[in-house]
Length: 289
Image (cartoon, rainbow, N blue to C red; front, side, top):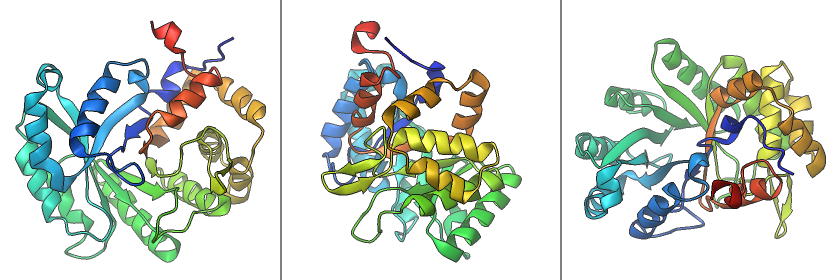
């Protein structure tokens, strides 16, 4: 039996990051498969295709050759990794701004302070997603983002939940501290990396946060829970408890939750969705058919 909760809880939740590690799909393959998914059974749950800003010209060429992008613009997020110069992003937005086959939904970049920092991207006049780090830098970054939001800029905080060669896997307390901090500041946030599974666990010997855990921790943070309590929620591994709790969210709670936790990027974009389907939380392929 389906236990599908208020449907928009999972709408456009997973951004397609197939181009990025560890997936590393070529841009042409990622575009073709994304357009296929846009017509498939999980379409309602998939957000934009994320692509490096340096691939803008290739992206424009590919979109021009696919009739599906001509009929309905291909929505993308343009990415520059933290520590990278902003010029490729500025150039990419200029190149694609008037292309009717591509909709640039947002630009994603890393937080840096000062006159050459992230704030230069505010002049692009598109939504920005700004990745933050840890410790005192995170506090400074979130204060800076909150200040921009207070001045009516469309800015979302971003945090990395998966390990990379330069970034250790953030444990429950670390992720809980981020959730506590963004909610206290009233900032929307996005996550990236590592959220391939519905429930917290060790997968192939590596720890991974669970999507349902994050949803429920966000819900509790919005209700006033603090870091210690949120870390406990993030550490739960009882699937039945998590599924029951998510299924019981009311419409207003789901809307509030998703206004805070806007999306997350996943290179294996269907991984979490097939797990959610198996748990009865999103409609099955048969239902879509």
